[in-house]
Length: 259
Image 1: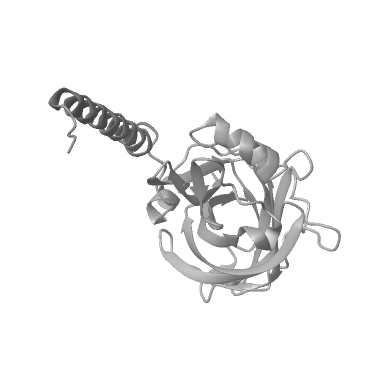
Image 2: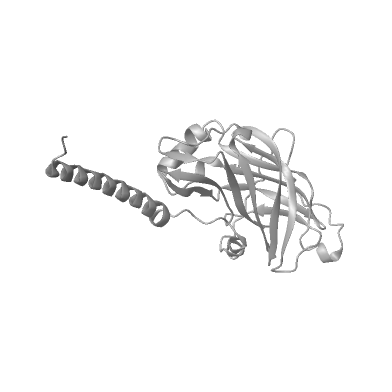
């Protein structure tokens, strides 16, 4: 019975060890890249809302956002018929550049779980408050300006995924008043539910989601997120060779408003 010579066995052992070392180093490098070098930004929270409200940018958007063929954004304040206690917030409030909106998608990079996150502050729009209701709201987002931690991901996003050459903007139009229940005291946070039409990649769907609002001096902040199933908007699954993603993601935002 033939046996493998000891020298040959040692060579095979060294080859196996070398392969395992290369795999371990590669996995380790990917882990360090995703968790340390390019650690994705955390999900937006009330801490981000409060931080945005303290921002120094005061320039407001000069024009309201386009709202599609059947809606329009009011260009004047709503009648101030509410009680005196709520009159200080009645009217039209415009988005400022302290606002932030982006996407969050679960991603597996060569076996390492991470998240793809892109953000922009290029948001145009306004909301109207009358009494304890947000009666109208509409926003436009320049999708060509969303950036992540990787330019290759951004190129994929603007190309085959969101086709921003053809669909450069995403829009949201409120379709039912938001009932606040009460006007919060300065610094107080309240939660409410918003319903409207969201348009991504040229496809419009109704959405309902929760928001957290805070009045801070002469500014209003709104925090929220909307789950997005890619197929509902005709968005191709972002997965490519070696990188797989979930078939859904999160649209998250912190919006800061001034009169």
